[in-house]
Length: 104
Image (cartoon, rainbow, N blue to C red; front, side, top):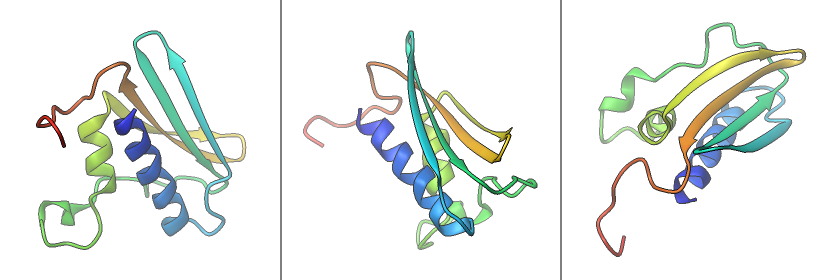
């Protein structure tokens, strides 16, 4: 659950920051052993949704959102929709993709 909340937060935040209109729809589907999260916005992709090159810098103030999504999700991708695009992340259901220390 925590991973899904973080992924949704990052995808919605990216849509707010990097699109004119912001997100217009969030879908969450449970499909067997996975959870599929999609954040839709009305702008076409045009190749703009990609991992930032500055994410490797631990002191960077931004640019790590999609790196977090990639680390937590089985996969993520962008798909064209009838009215824009959706950024989709597929997460494992029932356990965290990244192990955490007890109590954190």
